[in-house]
Length: 318
Image (cartoon, rainbow, N blue to C red; front, side, top):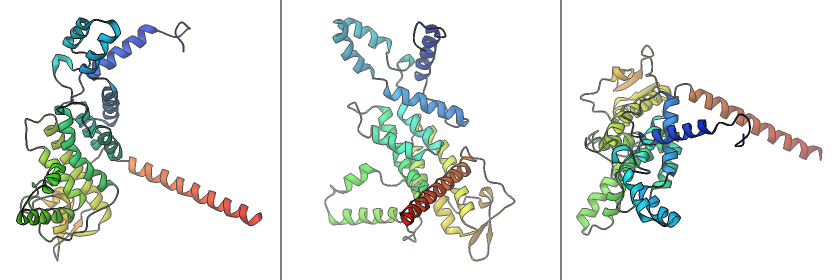
């Protein structure tokens, strides 16, 4: 509908834009555990906010448009493009956390690619928290692809130990001295021997270390429980029997404190665990979506096979 034609209501459009801008200013949610529809709506708002220019950009553009620096200063003081009350909106880390909660690991990877290089110097708190959460998100993505590291290391370190960050890996290239280099090489080899689920859970746990780092600490604590349940769901669906050592490692649990019955397993002879069918799986926001995706993939494969058969038949009849 074009402006001025029947059915077009400019006031409705203005009200919708006002509501959207108001929502953008309140994007730091107290929790990411939301119904799927609400979580998707929050992601949409975060994407809109991600495209909205920052205050300093508007302050540099406005003088050139109206020739008045005072107008730009007034706009900046009013908090244009910023959250209500002057608080910095953590749009990027909120968006990343919501995407991990929704199981949209590929989209989380694209988010990091768009924002891996901070747009401002020094980096904002939002960018720094995004970088921390990406250390966990990248292993969630790798786990979701079905890949897993070979369990080459027999040692099992503490469940709370964090994986080496990208900064630490960069620092290891600058350390002088053979002893330090050998020690870091051994730590890198041990981390490469761990499953992706273990690395993801340890990275999420490290994000919860500082309660003052908000909203990262809150989101990571919630994602820690959500992702661990997804790993457990995958193990129960994929293994009729698993060694207790492998289970504790993949779930990043302490054998001395974790109760396997809480996750739907029971012990059998030989140090193995079997899934207890009497205990239902924990509900997950992805429940039902996997079956729909599998049905869609199956339909796509049938379509591809049909195209191949038709192509071969056309060649034979030619």
